[in-house]
Length: 147
Image 1 (cartoon, rainbow, N blue to C red):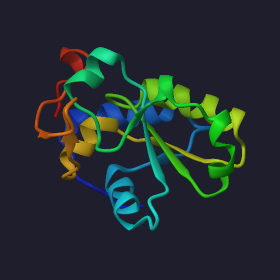
Image 2 (cartoon, one colour; image 1 turned 180 degrees about the horizontal axis):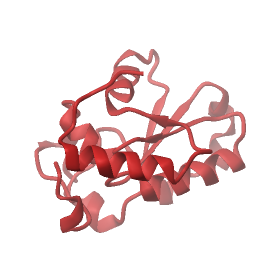
Image 3 (cartoon, rainbow, N blue to C red; image 1 turned 120 degrees about the horizontal axis):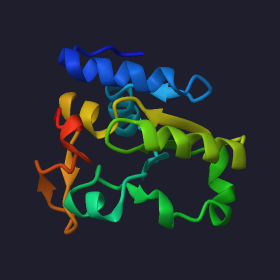
Image 4 (cartoon, one colour; image 1 turned 90 degrees about the vertical axis):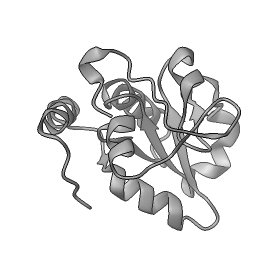
């Protein structure tokens, strides 16, 4: 896995969060960025596990809200798709990654370690609700304002 130097306070939050979910496979933002850039055809599916209010500010390009994606209708894709769940720091998305893996054991499921905060630090991009590039990011609360 690729490593990246994050500010100490962000690295502490990431480490504390990842430890809480030992049964979940975590992927670094740098590795997720590489995976999404090299998928041919694109088989990396980013699932945004944040609230609608957070998503209305920005999302990772091509991400799908977790709450609206129908996995049962997409059974054929589970063997070739890699799902990467994300939120602000990775707590809510780790819960969703656990649920998703339990429902679809053949699906490769990752939690984006550090989620949008780490994504922003490795050069990952965001788009607004009109699919235009943006630097704006909803970080859930002041404690997570580390972008």
